[in-house]
Length: 142
Image (cartoon, rainbow, N blue to C red; front, side, top):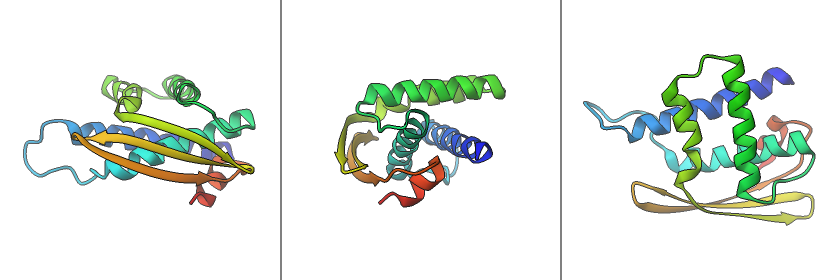
């Protein structure tokens, strides 16, 4: 189970790094991984699932997700050599988010995230169901 957790953390880090790379000036073809409309909400869901597994309760604020993100970043820094641009990208993840709301629905959590990509506003909603680990939570999300 611990191995899967590290896998999800690695996926989140890679997504953040690709998002940052896609924002950098391009010399040649545009990067292939530029679907920020998907990766931003996926990152929020991942952090909410990580919070649930760590605390056995859903997060209730963006501040709690930011704290969870900081803990994961610290773990990642302790276990790998994190490049400065990767750390900067990870720390800047929440700057794109303009609004994040949390609504409990029974034992599930409904997340609504609004964010800006290249000046364009996006809105995504996800429902996370409790599970024993991050994988189970993310697989059951709608």
